[in-house]
Amino acid sequence: MNLLQLTQKLCFLLGITGFLRPSDIEGIDDIKTMVTAGSLRLVIIAPKEKRAGWPIKKVLVISNHSSPLLCQVATDQTYKTHFLAKTPIIRQHVSLPKFTYTALVQSTTNTNRCIGSERISKHIRSILSLATITATTTSTSRKTIKARTVGSIRAILAGAKLEDTLTHGSWVSSSIFDRYILYVESGILHEFFKFYFVKYQRFTLDTQQESPTL
Image (cartoon, rainbow, N blue to C red; front, side, top):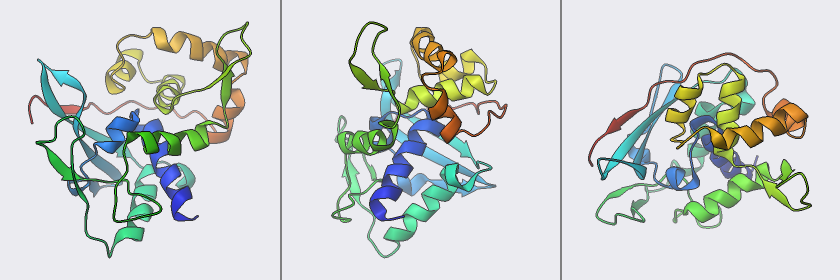
């Protein structure tokens, strides 16, 4: 797997397993990343969510997956072997420039540069474009399902509580799931889920920790 493919996989799995937006992935402070006891601990600087109007740090823990092909922990470690001899890239937060952090995802054409949410989104879509759905039952237009939505649906199908899924994915309400659950049940997205998630394993979601201020 070349660096481009590995970067696409990294971004895709972060979106799926962490319910992360491209802007969340952009905000991962890699200097604070920890791998302990078969899990990956990530810290996201100033995501869209706020507490009492203040920016927060979002702490996310992703456990090992039984399949090496879908394991975020292994993918993260493999990705970083490409940059062992590189100096970490320090960047300013795109919305709050007074905050600086060490970027995780780097350019595939110039590894001395990091990339933003737009490029991260393109990396994710390169995989998710394999699963397109019709916008409505009467429309011929096609749209690509979002990684955060796929991860959330996957969690619910595996037995996670709806309330935990909404909290973990920072969803405003459950209405977003109604349409996509219908697509899964009707078979439109069945092959996509079958391909990427061979079988539904029951699990619970780790409670997220957030710091009220940065």
